[in-house]
Length: 284
Image (cartoon, rainbow, N blue to C red; front, side, top):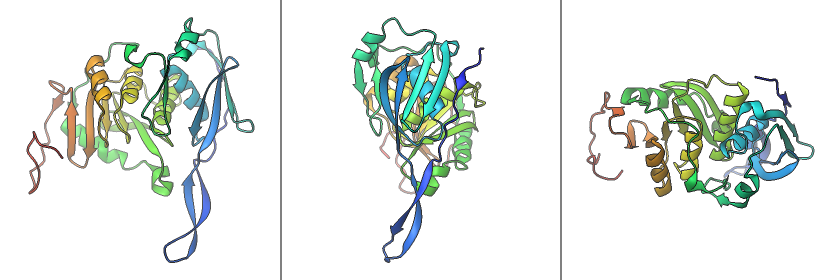
């Protein structure tokens, strides 16, 4: 792999402001940063992202990767972020031959802060066949417990989503941003920029909803298991079924809802029922 000209323009994820509480007392409170970053691909304006700014180079690379606007890491020549002009300039060896057509089909997704997918969302396919990763119930519980050591920005300031790359119960990398789509793009960018030990990731975790956008991006990363503490959408389930992604939704404590899990999820740590728990066929 060739060297990439790469800026190092990371900014603090939080800042402090003065607030007054319900007792009229003044105190300093950490809040999440929200910065505009306009992305240019070979001098062409693509999109403006709202982000914490904690890892902008990985974010823009992952965004272009997940949009299919960069086909391979070796196409990358330079990634330069300049916060004075709120711009990220990415230079590549090649561009997709159908770039104009891709940019002409823009879908505003249900991502918080509004995500955008270029091209026809439902015509997309993963770049590779996804592994049919098996999952033990006990491993899922272990992973959820290990994730409790993260969420630093959320604990201090709130107002962010988190995403993680995991190998079974082990958390390999964790990213927070103002939108879950930014967090997953940053992780995808780190994979290519080799800043994270993510090559063996087989589970993706997100604090946000399991929407079509999230399923598509995780499939593009070659990961076959997607876990969230939140729920699913109809299109998320549709794409997961098409691509072969196992979804674990509403994963909190010992509860979860598994989708596309036949022959892949092993129930080896079934918790005892408590008064008020519904049957397997009911709602929770």
